[in-house]
Amino acid sequence: MTTCRSDGIARLLLKSSRYRAKRGGLRHTLTLADIYVPDRCPVLGLRLIPSKGRAGPNSPSLDRIDSRKGYVPGNVIVVSWRANELKKNATLLEMERVAAFYRQLADRK
Image (cartoon, rainbow, N blue to C red; front, side, top):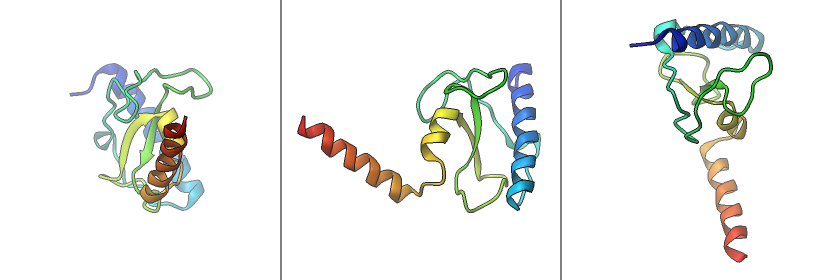
């Protein structure tokens, strides 16, 4: 069940994803029912807070799980803008390598 708040956010995310898909030549078959907006970012645990104007770290962001695929059901998740910005187009292997590298640096201290 969606609330009025999450329904409004989902509508905005859907509209902006259509624009990005068209601009990037990506497939887009999402409907409103495909977008679930949680209260908190499932990656970082941040409370999702819609912003007016520019996106902030806590703003909801529609992430393509596999950046090579378009905006299709099963390939999107709502996370914080911060989590999506950290991920960008990185592969899982690239993210694991970055984490391992900085973990080693932190362990040296």
